Length: 387
Image 1 (cartoon, rainbow, N blue to C red):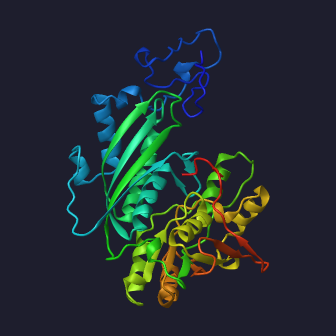
Image 2: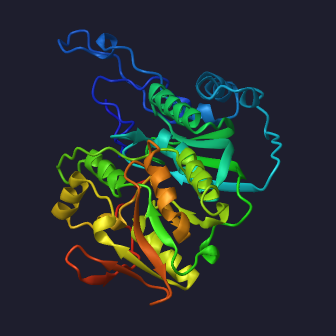
Image 3: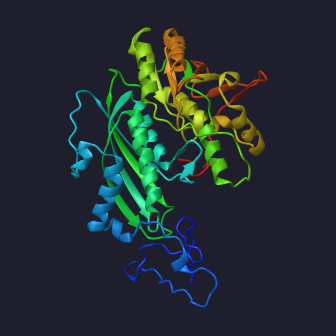
């Protein structure tokens, strides 16, 4: 007997048993196999992988075992191993604090997975404040029936990304919901960082004549996730750019300090949902200044451009998870761009535009054909659940 359910990630096919399903959790029992049948029954099948039960979110022994056997094992560090409800930190400077939820589908895609994304996304949000990451917290909402080995793989990816960023995961929480109440796992990460500059990086610091610098090509993450979903039945040789960018931003800060002072770095933003267009449109509106952008200067890979041409997408509106938009004083712009290109995550960095007092609040794109068009923020959700 096969239980009918809508959830494609946890459903068991004929002859498969989801380990740990019991009457207490509202499951159906699986009848014994018919000895006279020639088809293999449950007894002949390979042992089912361990799966998450509702009891894993109960706060009791199952919960404690899950925390110790999966999370503490993956994220091992002295602060986490104490399993305190709160962790004491002792920063010496100004603090940045951010949080981000991640519901991407599919959970694994070329170049990354929800684990890498959850760490990189929060580290990058801290980086927009020029904040060195000090500690992360991770909260999991897990669907009943989710495979434990898949959860362990996600946690291993998170641990590797956190190590890459030089930040420990020191606390967290876990809840388990019924089958069908979520798609496998959702992760919320919260980060604390120490700001390494003495000024505020925001639209108010931007000036007429400042340069717009982009750390690399756009659209890779959105296209990689879209291809992995298979909705449009196409393949693309594209990997997500998902990566923690603190090291890249630290390089930019050092370059600014050596070329006019750290105040030459005016503004930082990672172009995630809504892409480069949304970042620039928001900046122009908040700064009450105009922006001129050269389309030919914006790096877009041939594969991303081909997919956009095929499906009618604008690569400038697609989500990125490993790029940074910087506004830099003109006297330091070339040095900052060169420093970014010397970093592994900024090889394709380029000056792509300039801030202007003309047409305040609007972004003008000079196309490759020599014409001009206004870049407006996209309306609605272009690609849902991209991060």
